Image (cartoon, rainbow, N blue to C red; front, top):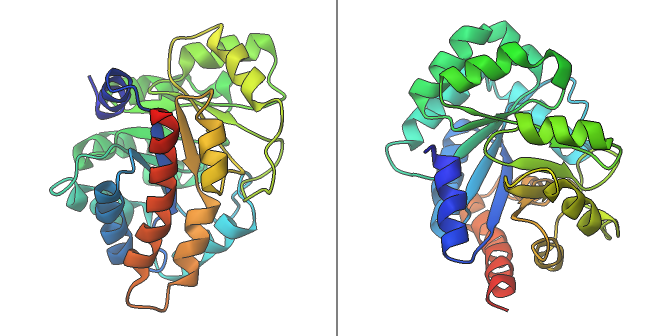
Length: 269
């Protein structure tokens, strides 16, 4: 049982659900990213989604796009991110999921990437621009190296596509709550709950909801019908606000703690 499967198993046994936070690796630098991961685990975050910066991020909105460009300017590379994961594996058990576009992986070398990712301690991988129909090589390599390849379902996905993605996705299924790019929204779509229920007809795997979630109230609402919630842009924005301050890790952790508390409050209700 991998770390992601074990996490969801333990959460279910305890009647809890997952709070997943996205952070962009290398903002403001990899040393701070390392400290953030360690601190967020202490605060009760269940899984970390770690962004790999890329110059043309088609799924990302302005907040994460800007963070990615800052990370690239600071010299952040995929080898450097894998080294970071190796470092934190000595101190944390939290599952780490890389979110990368195809180009950085192709440039690294597909087979070498999966082999190194396994050695360094990566648990899962999300590739937003990987077409399901062309994913066999990636899926085979991921399976051979014990890495969960996680696929996304969107509000426009057909029933046939939901069935295929539910079968192919490992670890959990990522439901994108809106048609558009990442970024905080004031209101979530009314059809998120019904769509999650539609996915559940075809799978027993955990279904987690991301894109647009930014407040503790939204976290609580999403967890009424999902197995986990992913908060990205709001956390990335908090890191950006504190990037020139010595207490950047502390301030970010304080914000994330409010999301953790909200998630636990819902589960105890």
